[in-house]
Length: 303
Image (cartoon, rainbow, N blue to C red; front, top):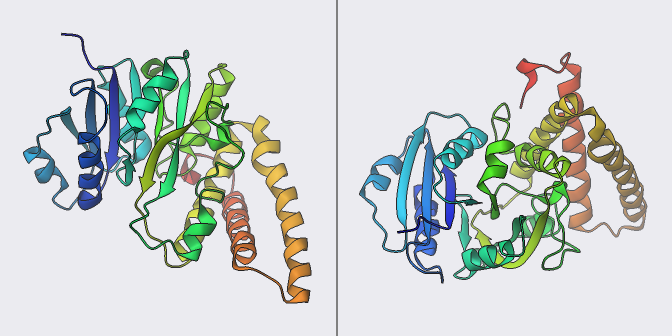
């Protein structure tokens, strides 16, 4: 029998209940059973994830489980990809739940050539969508899909390490940089290296996953933005040619935003989205400059 056409790789850590929803959704995909496999990499969970995975069995796909000890999502993904049997890999987060047609859409778009496919990620509608979540995605600091039509090329800054499929050889030739220890900018850096190779990622409008993560306040978003700033500084130390895209352009946009918000403040017309955007930009810059103030960018300063 021919092997699977697609390998789904999911890194996870201490999210057993959400992971269960994601795997259950994969069981309901509208593609033939056995046409894909799933590899879950448990990256050092200290809940019951490992024991629970050992008991699971699915009809639509073969489930493989691997274990690491806190290497981070980049290392966990690389490990899972190294065990893939299929010629194509689809990356999912343990909290990104695919709709029934998602895997089929990835495969259909992949038939057009040697391309990557970035699917759309939306908030899980079963959750209350707070003002913070409205701000974060799908046109915010979490995910940005504005202006993308089905099949359109995606800039490397819009490629995410979730709901992303590509030829397995891409991931093996240009793997995630494991010196990025958190889920922050490791996907952007890899996507830039892919673009340097001339590899194109296109947008899959109907390849939808629901992101099941709830935000009540801006505090965790600001923490993430500070990490993103630090990761940006580290990336610039590796790839100085990205200075315009990753630093100068955001600096100019941030300055314009600050002036606009200042004007609205004088008129008493500042919306939540404007305040949140400015605070996120300030958190990003604080992370970036905080990294640079600690000394030369080197191993000890990696995010």
